[in-house]
Image (cartoon, rainbow, N blue to C red):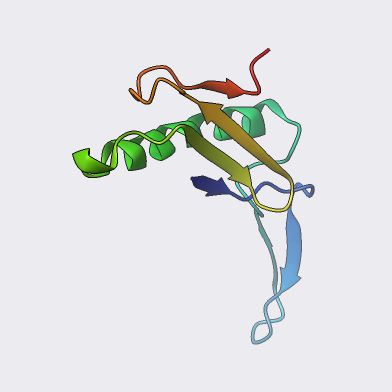
Length: 93
């Protein structure tokens, strides 16, 4: 499983307590529903697959890889052949 944190906000402005200055910082991986967010979720598949490849041989390949935007969505990818070569979005279209 690989987790990302998307955001519904573009940015947040906050006060720094000591200096009284305001600064802007980005929240989350990307703003949900944007092409950047969709790309980030697709890219998150790669580390999930690397985790599966790093498992000891006697564990075999997992039937599912999971990509999560915490608090928003869970994407499943399945390879029921258990060969780790053809993970597709699940449920299949």
